[in-house]
Amino acid sequence: MQKVFTICTVFIHMVLLVNAQNQQDSSYLDKNFEFVDGVFLNFEAFKSNQPSYSWDELKSNIFTNPISATTYIKEVYSKDSLALDVKDIWGISLAGLPYVNTLKQTEAGLYIFALLKVRGSLSMFQSLEQKKVETTMHAFNPRTGIPFRTANIERIEEKVEDYILDMRSGLVLAFSKENLLTLIYEDELLLKSVSEVKDDQKDRLIKSLMIYCDRNPVKVPVYN
Image (cartoon, rainbow, N blue to C red; front, side, top):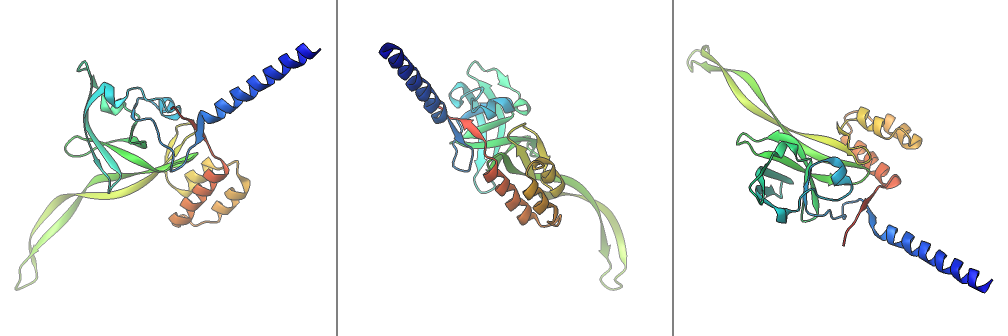
């Protein structure tokens, strides 16, 4: 009987040890979480915090602007000089910070990667949208005030747009009240609160998103 009791005790300790190790192997995703540095080819690799390539395995031409929280990538090569198609890269991590491929390019052809500024079950990033706008310009006669020449001028209009990344599914949606309601549907109290917020009250909507993240945390694996 004593022998059986000893075996059971050892087994229980082993189970508790495994559970403790499992708890240590993951951490809640928040602004302090540090991702493993490297390149993620898909969302699943990002979610599991396992880069498809480490930076040591690659040669790259990248530039980070800390003010705009944006990284620009021109090209990436493996060490055997095989080129990776940048548009096929889902995201990257630099110094533990995660960036998402916006699939947009600068006029110079650099791909734009945006920092996940809000990190949680519903994360957020910003993307600088550029579109060509045609406007009509008039040249006026200074004496008469009558226009004597008209021309259509094309200019680039820039606007910062916010996006939500659902860390449970990988779904990316434009930040809006309607989309936020879709993502928090199971939290009835918050759903009611957000429903009463006006569409243009962006700060309150962001605060609601962060409340949802606090109530519904997600864990991401960590590796020593």
